[in-house]
Image (spheres, rainbow, N blue to C red):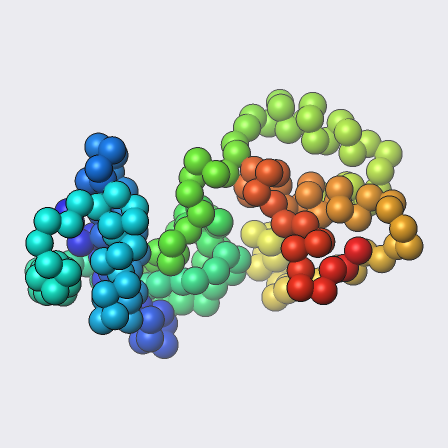
Length: 203
């Protein structure tokens, strides 16, 4: 086990530590545990749930984690999109990676428990042209959905802070398909959102 980083938000709240450990299945796993969870011991339960083999007491493990020496410090973010941090303005992807690297700070930026990389489906440009772009030809709404999905990283260059679009139609005309196309830009379509997932369905 190793404590990789201590992280906190730019307002100095939400302290958490990034821990890497060997799981029971022999794999190496990483979790980000909030300081609050350590105080209530829920963090140790999360470690055990993810395959950590606890041989001693929870109290001793918490004491070990908190007393770990020479741990690098990082800035913490909790959601995707553009973020204003002490490192500057950066874009966070669903897998926790930053598209624009920080330029004037030695402290990294980490996302709190990002989506697993194996849940995000990748591909090739040739495959994208054949399986996505070709099918959208002649369908202005699908073309719009694809553009809307990949534009967030470009908003800063256009001097636009945010953008909201409302697609309205009576009856089944493809609203769910448009949503599936848009959300599949950064994750597998099987894990994407659906209108019916909302507490008050939009369809």
